[in-house]
Image (cartoon, protein in one colour):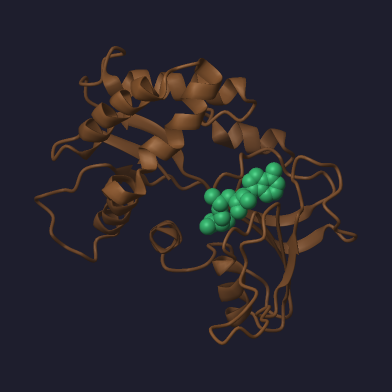
Length: 254
Ligand SMILES: C[S@@+](CC[C@H](N)C(=O)[O-])C[C@H]1O[C@@H](n2cnc3c(N)ncnc32)[C@H](O)[C@@H]1O
């Protein structure tokens, strides 16, 4: 899934920005498994790469159990919601934030050229087949209300660029890629980026064992809206069916 986003959104690169030659100072915000930071270090071995995250899922040992750091300065336990990110020098040549960053929360003491990669889970539909009463619309409406009441809205404002500007940034480039929920049965070209990203999306979303939609929805809708687990499970089942249909008109924006 990670590779699909990066390969398609960034044209098989780790970044779109043109970086100056020479050792760089790079920041990865919310490093997750740490794949991006590790790959960047391979491409820019002389660069300093600092990676921050509230979690600690970065690689710490190799296959033989020996400690590894891959040349990355891992900083787990950093909460973006807090004032102090523990960075004495906030000036970077390049800043990367992949997924769930929620644009606009750039720390005021951090500066540099930045790239944000985001998936907006809003199920979009261009044809008039998604009335407000449809299961998909009802589900997404409930998810928006529940996540907003928690202070972590899942949806993105329509004008993301304005949000980025308000955060004090100059927008140089904004690329939007549609991630269709259904496979295009008339295009079997496995190299087509659109096909590849849909393929990975579908594995992530519709492999029954992953229970992805259920996992996204259950805690939010039961805790925030007081739905019963049975009601959530029943709606999620129908939404899953609709998104997975051969001729599903839905797509998300990456
Ligand atoms: C969806 S993962 C993305 C990981 C990686 N950047 C990628 O693109 O694969 C989002 C990451 O943000 C981190 N995160 C979420 N909220 C955070 C917070 N308040 N402070 C620090 N890290 C946070 C999570 O721990 C998680 O590793």
